[in-house]
Amino acid sequence: MKITLKLKCLNNRRRYIAIEGNIGVGKTTLTQSLCKIFKGSILLEEFNDNKFLKEFYASGSYAFEMEMQFLLDRSIQINKFFSKDHAKIFSDFHIDKSLIFSKMNLNNTCLEIINQTHFNLFNHFPKPDLIIYLDGSLDSIMSNISKRNRTYEQKFSLEYLEKLSLNYNHWLESLEIPVFKINSNKLLFKGFDELKNIFSPILNA
Image (tube, rainbow, N blue to C red):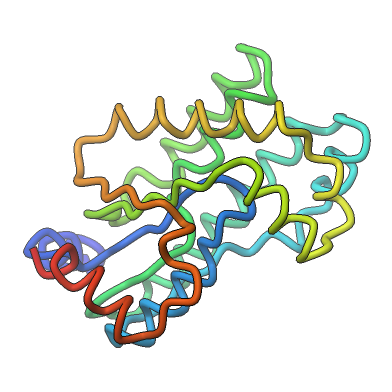
């Protein structure tokens, strides 16, 4: 009942905004900034508890187990988050994220299982009504990944990140909600006032 009411509310204006983009492009930083500027609730991706993540990026094994763990963890997180009321939400991930990565990492049989599980877990939850997509150059993304120095991320190749960008673009084309694309380099060193000027017209549309 509460979720149904929220869905009606969220459809009125830009209430649930998901920031998406390639690995290391600056999603979490922008999400945190917009949340402070526009006084919203924040929903951040939780990935450190995934038992299979580091092993996958180290050897390429456990891809299916990793994606299934992400689905289950996110369903628990989102269920808890939407048990409370939120006037405006900023998230650094879209619930379709696992589908985008699964298309890269899984065979068709495993992908079908992930798709079915995703639908069953998330179909009844509110969906974002706006996507802000950070589009960064591969060189800047590689530089960001190097700077934040997560050990398992250092194995990412340009080819992998390029393929991920292509998969994201295919996903964006399939969406039926507004997508605002912006080059992440244009947001570097922007203060809160500048960010507010950039995003106010989009969020208040």
